Length: 163
Image (cartoon, one colour):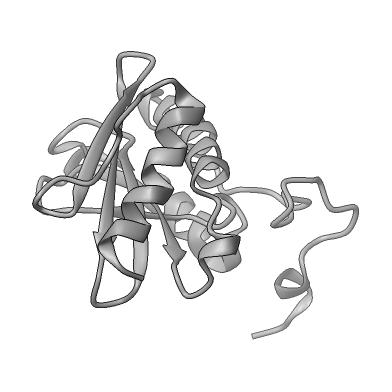
């Protein structure tokens, strides 16, 4: 997708948020702050033809102090998107936990930046709160959310598999 098309997508998002003239900067990135603490960085990844949205959900250096059980809960949440639908949990060089969503640009008509942003923010609030608690995180129990965000009545397919 060409840069003007990308900026059109971002401009439309900006208009829906009341931010006129929203566009990617020279580094093909843009940052937005929500509720005075959730910082979302949007990056146009030209090489992989996608837009990546990421949001820190913890403090710098926090990953080193997280318990084994909490780190395992984060990994479990990544498995088949069971604890963070359509997103991934990870950590960066600053040893901070991040939530990230990658949006493919192969079909610009299906690129829903606002929906992805809302999903990321909802999950970031949840995970920020979970990581901010002083106790260890418990593993995520099934039934969990499906990709549509609705509860599923039975455990996810992978939970029925024997390894």
